[in-house]
View 1: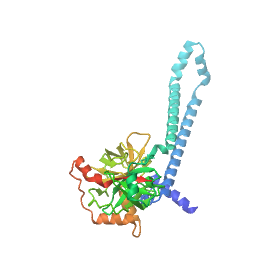
View 2: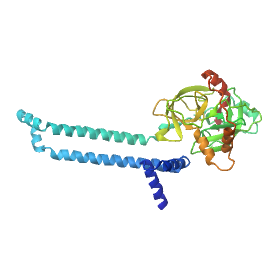
View 3: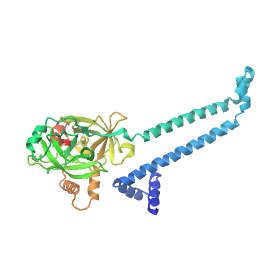
View 4: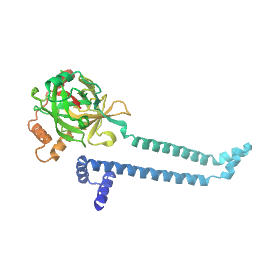
Length: 367
């Protein structure tokens, strides 16, 4: 009980801005790795907002009661009688009070409508939808999969979900979103030429919606050095960005800009980007003009046009640093930082950039 009370005290101090800078940095570091704590912070913040709304409504009611009690109601009733001269006199005498009461009434109605609209928005968390693609038919590539992998019994099954993944290193490790693979027992990737490869799940983190696949197929040949880099820096607001992904059976290009440094309802694990995306873009890279990967596309807001969300690339570094032992993610990030060189996309025009990176981006097919 005491522990729970202490946690609520920390949450309250964090929301109300009473923490020191050091305490705030420590708390946010813990917050990034604890989904249960993030839920508690969100719930407590909503509770505090409701208390503020309640207090404001009570104060407004008190003010209205004062105004109402000060009005000469018996004399005002006379306004409804056909005594024009008296009406005129009463109006001259009390028009200021009546105007104030009317204004306060309009204000009360406006505040009530605003409050109800805010409560409605809070209840519509389903306005954000994941970008995995529903595949309802057996794709044309399936016969080649059967012949290439006869040990897998897939001839009677259709692919269920699709998304996008991109290579993290030269050894066949790719990254995508966890929700693309969730519930699947087999996952294949396919390049833009139609070649498909069997993969296994090498690492996953549901809280961050990230998963790493490993290509387990002797027919796959290394594509060589990655042309892009994985950003460790925080980008600036309005940063131009672009992506390549598979919302259809061929690779598709989209562009936009970074519109907020947090995700839906202030989620600090994501960026908000203004970009047209569709189911199938999940797991696609979000790159800046120099070829730095800023994030991994994961969702879009259904209640607004062109609003999408991407998991920050810096989350990969945070997770790798937080892990102990020799996890797959830690090895990949450690190797990346050790052998890091400038990417090959800086200085190229967009068509040249796309030509260099399109072979490193794959369609994901999970069933």
